[in-house]
Image (cartoon, rainbow, N blue to C red; front, side):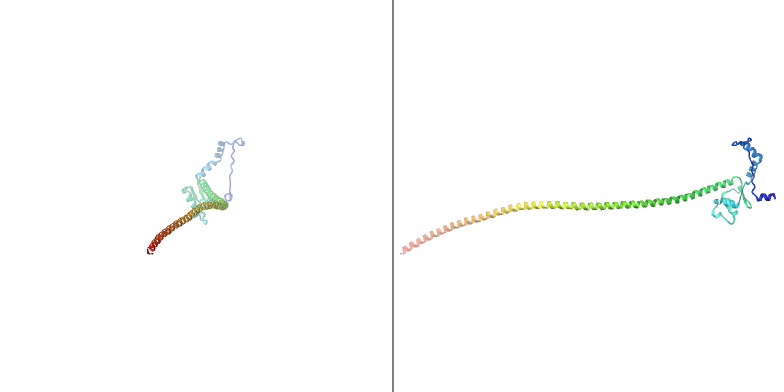
Length: 269
């Protein structure tokens, strides 16, 4: 009946260790504490427990506790014992460090701490991986948000710069057009002024040369007329002189002939 009661319950044994003989607060005598532990048999119990298999886990508890150390292909939910065997075979190479019971797994001293260390390392690596992926996702989300904001800002900035540049081009084109028109007007005005001045100068020079040529031609014509009249008068004078000489010669010849005819007639008479 006592064993049935003990097996039906979870007994706990509490041993009180006096920190010092005077029972003063915040006073601890290590030597006295070790003597009490040795007298109570705790150290011997720990030694005996360490020499055997002090740590015990049921298959379900072990699986729930150390399932993070298992691979997917090693898990068989229908057979927890086989699953635990697969986990331990892949983790602990020495088979003397543990034993499989009917409902529990027995570990030698230090193996649970080793498993806990592996579990904590695995959880830490999984946590780091989760943190890595979460941080990566957050950073990518933040990066996409920043990129979207920068792209939007660049779009509006480039639009503003493009509109300013277009307005600058329009103003520049308008200014160039105005300058072109104004310069063309000034050039045409200057050209017209120079052209009129050149035309006036050419007309004056040509008029001067034409008048000089005309005066020269007029003088030549007058000289020709004078020469003509002078030559005509000289020709007429010479002609009258020649006629007069011819008439005189004819009269002299006729007189002589008449005289001869008269003498001949006189002789005949």
